[in-house]
Amino acid sequence: MSGNDRLVEAAESIAESFGTGLGAILSIDPLTEDFNQADPGNYVLGKMYSRGQRTYVFCKEVANAVPGVAGDVAFHDDSGVRGEVTTDYSENLADLLRPVGVYPNSPDDGNYFFLLVLGPYATVNNNGDDDITAGLDIIATAADHGVVNAGARTLATGVGIAYEADVDGANTVGVNVNCLANW
Image 1: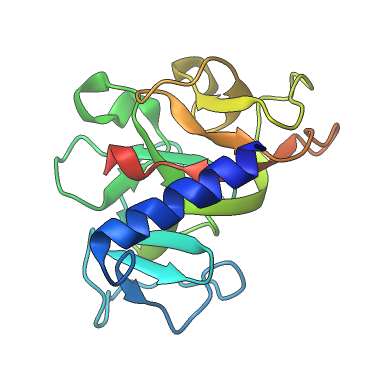
Image 2: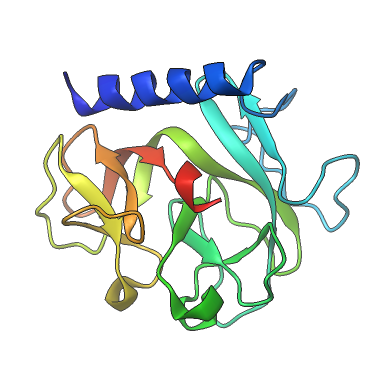
C-alpha cells in the first residue's frame, strides 16, 4: 500500500467516525481562491472545513517576524487560542514543535485564512537539501522554520508523506499532508 493510499484510508476512517465527515463543506476552494481577510465573516476560528479530498482549519495569522507564505508549515501560536498560527518557531506554543498544517496562500499578519491540515499539496516548501523521494516521511524541524525535511515522523514532527520527489531548484515537494492529530 502506497503512502497516498494509507493517507486516504486514514482520512476515510476518521471521516466515518465523525458521521458526516470532517467539518462543514466549503463553498470556496482555498487552493485557487486566496481567502486572506481581516474579517472572519461567518467562519469560526479553529473550526474544520472540508472541500473535496482536503480538510482545512479556519485560522488567523498572528503578527510575527516570520510571515507565513504559501507552502510553509504552520505551528500553534503561543497565545493558546485555537486557530491562531505562525511559521515562526520561536513563537511556537510551549516551544513544542507541533506542525498543524500547510499554508495554501500567504495571509497578511492578523488576517484570517484556511490552513490545509489533511490532503495533498503539490508545493510544500522544503529546506533545499534535495534528499526527498516519494514515500518518505516529511517532518518539520526547529532548524528549518516553516519548511520541511525528510526524517523520522513522530506526532510532534510529522507533516505528511511525500508523494513525489522534491523539485530541485524550486525547493518544493508534493506532500500528502496529515496534521489532524495536532489539532
